[in-house]
Amino acid sequence: MSTAGMQSFVRSGLVAVGLAGSTLAATSAVAATPYDGDWHVEVVTESGTCDRVHGYNLRVVNGRIEYDPRESALDFTASGSVDRRGRVAVAIVRGADRVNARGQLRGNDGTGTWTLASRGCSGRWQAIRRGT
Image (cartoon, rainbow, N blue to C red):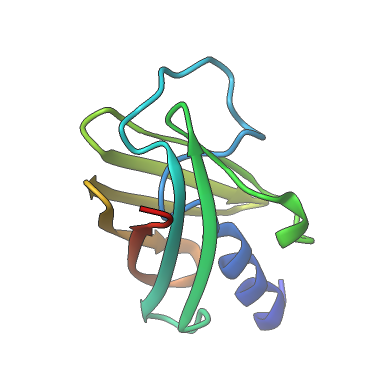
């Protein structure tokens, strides 16, 4: 994958990192969480050659992330969750590349970390609930 393609993958794949999983990969119903709603997520690369900073608008519904697939022309899958305590775990996979992220939501904001080991990239994310 070219550097530009990888940067696009990281930008697009990390759409889901900030919070939970994707409706594309949801296999079972999840109960509503206190974190359901609209969020803005900022993703920052701290190590590696992936793009430095990107922001995304996302929605959490029943503990899963929903996003507009038109935001990405890339083919990837995402799975993960945000539980009732606000703990976040998500994986985004495209080909052999896998982004893993973890974090914590509290009230109307949250933070966490992510890694893309196959490309030597890692960083942090910060989320803020919108419309509150």
